[in-house]
Amino acid sequence: MLNGSHDVHNVEAVSYVKKSNPDIEVGLIPNAGHTANIDQPDIFHHLLDGFLDSIKGRLDEQIYT
Picture 1 (cartoon, rainbow, N blue to C red):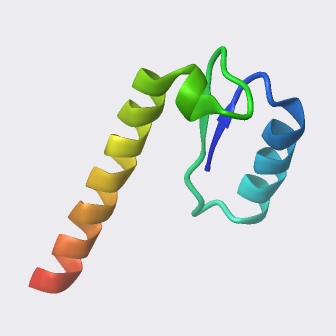
Picture 2: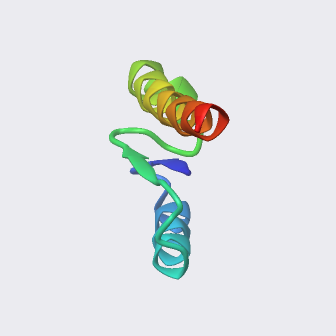
């Protein structure tokens, strides 16, 4: 889950979800609101690429083991 730091209600909700399920990956995008992907596209894409790479790595491990 990715949220903009200015989207206070969602930041609180994500914090609650993370406490409820520690396996969920979360990220906070600074100086962004509800449309964090538009407000801070470079940061958003960097975090998204890292997440997708980690999933690919996990899937590769499952396929080849």
